[in-house]
Amino acid sequence: MSDLNKLGLAEARDALRKGDTTSVELTEACLKAIDAADALNAFVHKTPEIALERARAADERIKAGDAPSMCGLPIGIKDLFCTKGVDSQAASNILKGFKPEYESTVSQQLVDAGAVMLGKLNMDEFAMGSSNETSAYGNAVSPWRRDGDDAQLTPGGSSGGSAAAVAADLCLAATGTDTGGSIRQPAAFTGTVGIKPTYGRCSRWGVVAFASSLDQAGPMTKSVRDAAIMLEAMCGHDPKDSTSADLPVPDFEAMLTGDIRGKKIGIPKEYRMDGMPEEISKLWADGAEMLKAAGAEIVDISLPHTKYALPAYYVIAPAEASSNLARYDGVRYGHRATLEAGDGITEMYEKTRAEGFGPEVQRRVMVGTYVLSAGFYDAYYNRARKVRTLIKKDFEDAFAAGVDAILTPATPSAAFGLGEMTEADPVQMYLNDVFTVTVNLAGLPGIAVPAGLDAKGLPLGLQLIGKPWEEGDLLNTAYALESAAGFVAKPQQWW
Amino acid sequence: MSIDQSTAAKVAKLARIKVEDDALPALADEFNNILGFIEQLNEVDVEGVEPMTSVTPQRLKRRKDEVTDGSQQDKVLANAPDAREGFFAVPKVVE
Figure 1 (cartoon, each protein chain N blue to C red):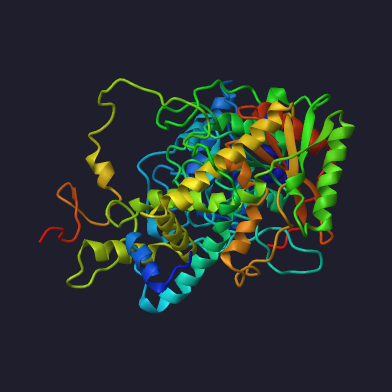
Figure 2: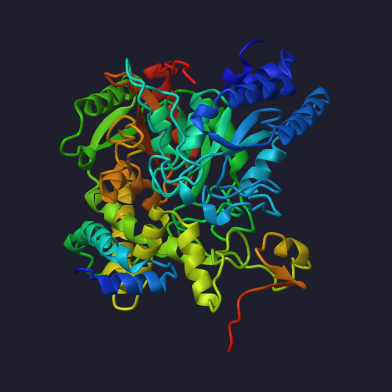
């Protein structure tokens, strides 16, 4: 078999079980693709020895007829996941050289499911960003380019390295994390599939924390079927995360029937933003038509507090970040600034954090500190939490009225060029998450599915939002949309 | 609500991030820009609305109050920038 790195999880799994290939062959194909793709800056810590060792062990298990669900499948891991003995620095200089003595629950579950780790993937620093331009490793670069233009584009963020690696076939799939859209926006920008499950589905233990009430891990894959396979391996109760749900994890792949007859799909009018590009409105309308043709009923709904989701998010997420990132003080791990004579512990903290955190992380930590400070806690933080209650209620009302899933665009535009937003103020960059952030605030599952190309040949994605804990049903609707959209475009290799 | 340079300096101090004096005006501008965006929340009627504490209704699980982990001093100290004699070492804290 040739081009083994181009396979998806399901195809590779089936080929392994039939004996058409081996995990070592698959892994070697990916490692070769990774070494030839340094221009994308997607893999920032390569782990070929670990990969080949796990691949050999997987081949033994397959031979012995004892193959778990992802046995022998090579994947990439976002740098936000702690991986035992392997650099895990959340793309921040403050964690430079940090080698965890433990493995995150999600990456351990993937090991247990037989998956092969190829290395760690680039991302925005502490997952704060929408373009992978805040990374201490430098930008990740999208494998996609506009037709007739060699400008470098963003793969999106914060899971930009994961999206670039999957789209460029450097791995079969990758882990991502999503606090405000960090799985779904990069998936949409790169023509890949990304699902953020219900808050509590995946354990957060060992995942470097950004905003704990919003953070969720999820898979980034080449198809909806692959997302179902990998999500199932990642989910499950973990006593080490008190917010992890003690609920059974269904066989998501078995739920992909493609039959969505009678399902009610809501189209929220508030997502029709002023100045929405024609291509995005058309994609959205086409998506609704496809679901209708597959037998679903399309209904107009209202989510009245949508407009306030981003401002609420930019209070809550920085507030939680300022608290979570207080641990980076130069004492227990990572960077410590060189001190001058007479410097005390306060100078050590201040210099360490000024040197270790990049500008966007510093900005968010300080905004969070401000909104939590005495005198402003009620005006900003408590008000934002009340608005969050209202945003969640909007969705509850829609689901109570019989809606099964909600269809929206995934992003307000196709991928933009690296550096194009540098001059814009931070709020302009925040608007990238306008369609995705509501889902985190309400704790719901959301999936981005590639649905078309824009006039310049770049991928565009649609988002489906589901009911809490009903990822299986959501994946099935996404599967129907994927089948109808028939998206098969791949980036032309230039790297 | 407008943030001046002294407020910006105070916030930087609270966050334990060193910001040079000449960087304070730009920082104050950035804060004002972001807070201006956040001000929209004042348009929402939140009278009688409970602030969200948990996005999924759940009661935190309880477990037996017993030691389940520990005795990993080497591992705990393995990544410290300065560890000596089984402790984290820091500049003098108490005069």
